[in-house]
Image 1 (cartoon, rainbow, N blue to C red):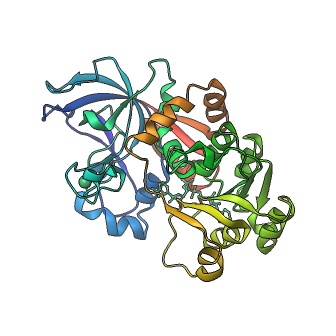
Image 2: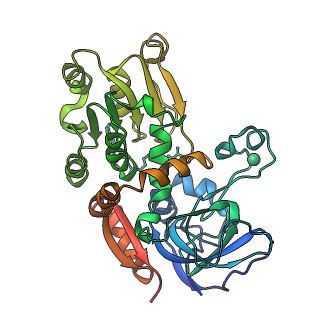
Length: 358
Ligand code: NAD
Ligand code: ZN
């Protein structure tokens, strides 16, 4: 089969002929890739930035990609709940099942996590073989392009509902810092869950993202470059001086975090999804401790509570249409993956989805 692979310890991916994977363990399923989607992580790996240089060498060469809509084409003898023909998405974190975290219902922070498309062969290919546990069944009529978005949508849902408690959102004022694909997807989700006012801050260099945040239903979109340090006051003025109840940090930018914490009300909740480029400095005494803020670090998607919530949310055609019409900005064939990657690199794309090799 053909696959988009990381071959060398330098910038780039290459299309290579590689053997079609076969089931080797009785609990595995073989999946055909219907649609693949390009993630920020794939972009980091392609650029071969500092993170990639540290993380990737032990597994090179490997097949990249981990966001996909797939179909079951073969099952091992011990597979229990999937059948040939089922449509699935992939949870890209493979948990060990036996460590302290896995044995205490926290598989998403397994201390031995391996990631498909990073530590294991991924889905930028015709086929992939994974454990049944990592294949999450979709409604058979769900558009595979939407199915491919469930990995980042799941990040958004986990950040929004770290404990599955919808009361944390209903009627609450929310600030989303960062209007990347994940921050943007969070907007229609918090709206569906009954949020009060939804504020979004976005990096000022990307007008498409600012406009998309408005289209997706944000009540106020603030351009971080233009509004800068005025952001907390603008948000407080719009909330009777109270500030927001919930901060969903989805940028990994220190200014966004500081502004977000300043705009947070006393006793508010913070979910931190964005990865910062390195160590950060902020006034933790006044911005977190004295505020009595509840802070959650968010890793991946809860396995598999987040997927179950997401499946319910995706029953909404309105949510599906919002994702399809606003988040997916480009569609290319896998053989033209480089065109898609350049659209992401040049910040013209929000999400690029890819159809299987011609
Ligand atoms: P992204 O990098 O496309 O989005 C981040 C956005 O933040 C960009 O649009 C950028 O313009 C914006 N931004 C920059 N400075 C800002 C500022 N001062 N104020 C407001 N916005 C600002 O990334 P994404 O794919 O949407 O992911 C969001 C973040 O989550 C990234 O940091 C990513 O690394 C991280 N992430 C974490 C996990 C996890 O498991 N914790 C999983 C996936 C992604
Ligand atoms: Zn584990």
